[in-house]
Image 1 (cartoon, rainbow, N blue to C red):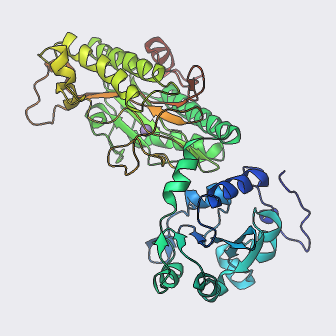
Image 2: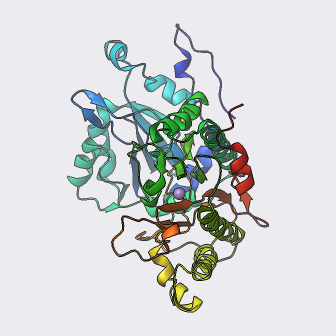
Image 3: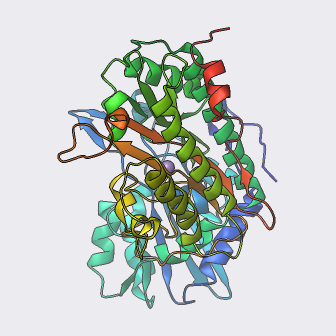
Length: 449
Ligand SMILES: [Mn+2]
């Protein structure tokens, strides 16, 4: 259960742990992880560092997802350590000690005493002692399970010892792929906040609105709901929608253009990731409509393919078959449907749908556990408890060299993305409160109040 304590000597409520999960859930995660590393090993998990933005100002701090997952510690400068003493694992957290002078400038610190009382750990220590304590602890261990590159002091201690270093992330990644009921509740909430933000942007839109203004509406909604963006919001009007990771958001959306918004928020570290595309004047043109309908039917087929036991690729196969067929039907590509799809889903259609159909979603927006091009982990099989995105798209940039599609499709970019929980039966769309049917969008866009 979440522990609630009365804080003595005038401490602020900042010292109460407001962990998103019961201590028991964290401890179960720790035990599950530690049972997969050797008894003689030591596990060291530093959180992210504070990154300098300019001179003495820093980027907003975001804790390491692994730290959030195993310990819930979201302050900067924590190091979680676990090693076996006798028959049982001892977990400890090294934290910044209280320091009134520093706290007046930088903000209150939880400190050693409160960390031990309220976080899922057996012991807490001062970070001032981390180098000497780790040196001692590492000495008689067989291996160090440790992610290099997040804490320079720990890096130095680890690399100056003769004990072999092992990357613990494959074990943690596998665990993070399957979400617990408590994680799913948070992710549902994250998707609902993002849905409300998208709806607000639709309502307040008008021809000529700045992409940055739409961004401000969305991110204002996130902030108002005590959330924040999970990744840089993409707001692309017209041709800008044909740039997959566009985020300069500095153009006006012209009358007659579609606007593509790919934006999601973060709740207790868990991301939502939603994309909607709609006409800024509230009415799809015939060519926009035909591309939109094609992407929407592909997206629905992709969602329907989110079935436990299916291979990862089945989602991409479902969206690709519909897109390739539709492109032939619309006269955008001129070949057989077989050639349009290609033997390895690498046919002509990839010119216009050049990204994957989706990815795992969780503490990272492109979550760990495989499924993306270039991932070292193999594609996972779909299992109940996974949350994935389904986000097919079609893009026809008139600025591309040698683009040969019928003129009416030039300058169109459409992507539709939902967050989907895989279950033992039908897929559950966590972002289902965000409209995507053509008549719903036409009803909403520009309709304040
Ligand atoms: Mn996505």
